[in-house]
Image (cartoon, rainbow, N blue to C red; front, side):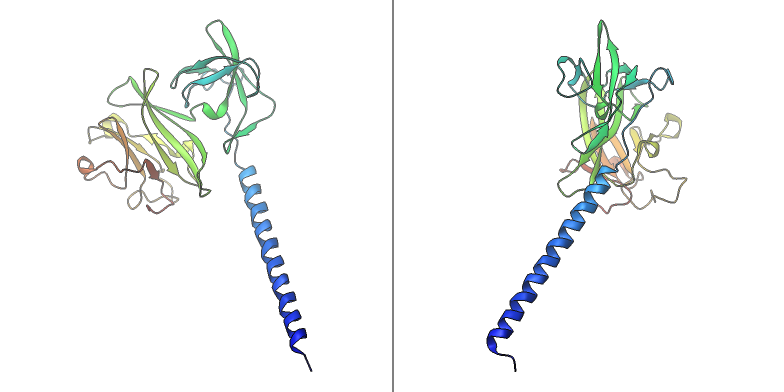
Length: 247
């Protein structure tokens, strides 16, 4: 017959086992999550020796450091403005992960100076405004937010100055899905950027927040272009791509 003391000891043992199991499960989930982030695709670009045309890119970040070697520890030679056009001459042997974005350093020449810039600050897709050719829209990764969602960014740039920016939370978005509506197809008197390819089944652009519009020098999100003139800028500077509900 079990005594009260034996019963209490058994309960304590079961509690310890339960806590140990929970701790093991948490560690396992953290390990899986770290592997997922470690396997994120590298932000990579062609260099001049492979393709002269594709080696010409624009900067996504502002005050981008031009360094004398391929590392953040290297000496800063100067800084480059957002939207600066650069020609990528070579790339470093190994990528580096900074703020959740993995990319290599790329060698460029700016005037008399030759140095290296980190690829995470290079635009993965650059689009020219269909209404004002002096304005460009640069697109690229922006790491992860505090909830662990992968983020992308779109910035409107003119003459080396940022006009506005907006962030997009997504796990499937990439530069191949981003495009600007051509002038001949644009009936809204404003620039419209699509975040999903309407020819694929991965996104339903009619029922989700799949558009970014540039209106009155502001980047805004919308799920439809029917009443574009009535769209109001949201207070939160976030856009949500096709696979996320707008919350």
